[in-house]
Image (cartoon, rainbow, N blue to C red; front, side):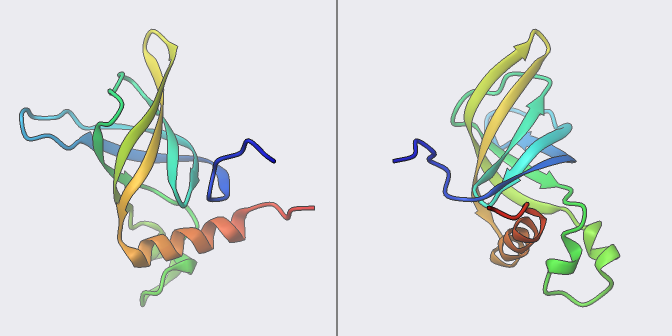
Amino acid sequence: MSSERRQYRRIPMGATVAFQEITFTKDADPAQSAYRDVSGGGLLLSSPREIPLGTLLKLEMRVPGWGKHQDHLGPARELDMRPLVAVGQVVRVEAIDDSQFELGIKFLNVHPDDMTALLKYIEASSPEEK
């Protein structure tokens, strides 16, 4: 039996994501970074600061090439410009060095149409399994 716990196929990515803590007690500083990979369940991103486990984040992800998988009117090129907006939760934090952290983010809320488009994009972008 495999020790792999992932439910979704994961693909490498080098695109940008803007993220901000969802909080009621203070103004959260927005940040922008790159995410290393994405799946239907979440993403792995670099962060300039440590964010505690369990923290909720508003995410605005750029997904180059996902426009043709969206069920919307208009050219795919224009749809590629629209970010995927989601709510995610920090489920893993790893210090890379003193000024960089790797965060594992689990998607909690994504619009169903966007999730469908993301899953189609990931399927089309995944290397064939042998």
